[in-house]
Amino acid sequence: MKKICAFLNCKEEGIYPAPRSREDITNYKFYCIKHIRDFNKSWNFFEGLTEEQFENEIRKSTTWDRPSWKFGTSNYNKKINDRINFLNDIEDKKVLKKKVDSKLLSSWNLLELNPTANIEEVKKKYKSLAKKWHPDKNLKLKDNASDMFVKITNAYKVIIKSFKSQSIDIN
Ligand SMILES: [Zn+2]
Image (cartoon, rainbow, N blue to C red; front, side, top):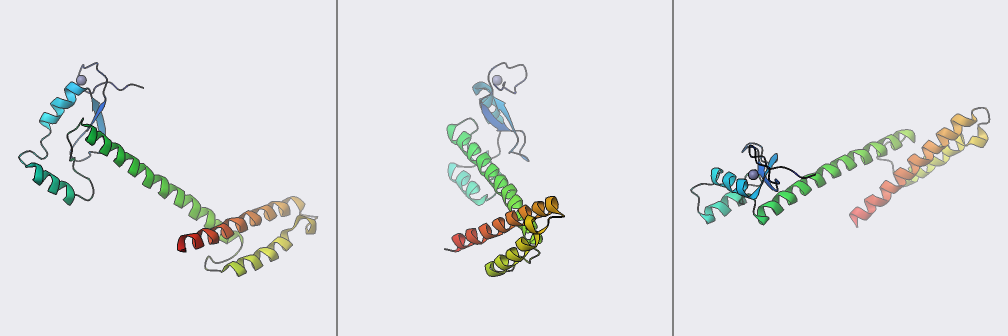
């Protein structure tokens, strides 16, 4: 979907991102080329600084809380995109890690083990639980038992996999 320039009554396509405010430069509105130029003129965050002072200010800023490029230049647009991608990456990783962690934790709980247990303890525990819940040994509780059997088997797989990924991390 095409964005329309944010300038009042302008019908041009809004291609160039500009922050809504100094306090929140991760929130953008989009302007056409003419109006991004106007925006640049009015944006004087670094007004009065030399090019060199500019660079120094930017290097000092570890959180990227200040714009270091003129809005609408390809460099600026690229940096914005990099930043957005970077933030998305972090979010994705956080979400993924949380999912993986909670899955792993519930797996340990299912096997009635502490996450500090070693791989031999896990195997031993799984064998005893698998025996206990094997559907053939639980004719009266067949459905529940096979349900439980599948659950502990999946939990076992998740835990074994986590051991393997740990050793890959270390090596
Ligand atoms: Zn415009």
